[in-house]
Structures are given as C-alpha cells and as structure tokens.
Image (cartoon, rainbow over all chains, first blue to last red; front, side, top):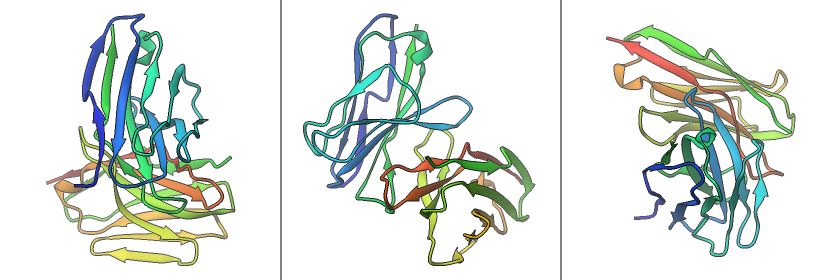
Length: 112
Length: 112
C-alpha cells in the first residue's frame, strides 16, 4: 500500500549520541519535508527537498541535517543529540505545489 | 515569506453546535489552502482544501470559505460530534513554492 513510513516511532537516547530518523515513501512523490512538532502543537518546517540531491533548510533553525540520495528516502540526522531536541518529528511528502501533503506517523524523540 | 495566523487556539463546543476556525495569510500569491485534522497521537490528515479560483467548498458537515481580497479563509464544521475533537491546522501555499506554511493549530473539544 502506498504510504509514508517513519522509523523508529519512539526513541529515547542519551545526550551526545548521533541518531538518524528514517523516512521512506512509496507514493512516488518528488517533494519531501521534515517538520518538528512541539508540545504546543505548532508544526515547524526544518528541512525540505524538491527531489534527488536537493535539500533546503526550513523556517526553523535546526542542528539536524538531511540527505536525499534516493527519491523515496529522506533521512534526518542529529550528530549530537541534546535535551532541547526532544520533540516529535513528522515527515511528509507531496507530488508538487498545490497538492495534498501526506504525513508519516512521526518519531517521538526523547533525549535524556 | 508566507505568514499564517490561526484563531482561536482552543475552541470548546457542545455536541450538535457549529464550530468556526479562522485563518489569515500574508502572501497574496498564495493559491492553495488545505485544512488538516490531527487526532491525539496520530498524524495530520487532510480533511478539505480550497484553491484560489473558488470562494467556497463543502464536503458533508465541513465547509471552507476563502476571501482573497481580505486574505482570510475559514473552516466551518456543522453538527459537531465528539469524534470531531482534534487539533485542526490551516495552511497556505504559493504555487511558486513547494512548502506549506501552517497556522499554529486549533484544539477543538466537542462535549457530549
């Protein structure tokens, strides 16, 4: 079934660890996004990609990095996790401008 | 860049009442306006969208209106039910850009 998948769903890690949050979509979408959702609900765009080898920073400054080597895969990496990175991270994709964006189930990250 | 304001941040209604959530946007070039519903612990999902060439769109109990001159759009839910309880996000997109700018969200609580 065409969908967008995120792993892991939940992650608890120690400060200073390097982590990668995985996002894959089988919808054939060119455009992919990472949002950080704080406990107050708001969705902050942290990275996006128009296609393979394209990555852009979003509105919210983030210490994370992304890569887009394959159309279907858009991983997000934190080189050194800190408690301030504790949040929910949502991956999304869409076909193009003015089309529905589909979200993954999210990764809830806790840094202790 | 685009800025989307959403009000109210929380809305409590009795079952059967109507609920209205309002959003304003800043970029007059924006032409796609989706609404997403996020239930507790779940991913945001599109419930209705409208493009700038129409002023109103309806789907059963939900409707969206758009006033391009005033740069505001609204979500209307009639005959609310407890299962309508969720966080609702409005968003705006410019066809020249591929990112959605979201409002801060409205938590709707429908009491039986």
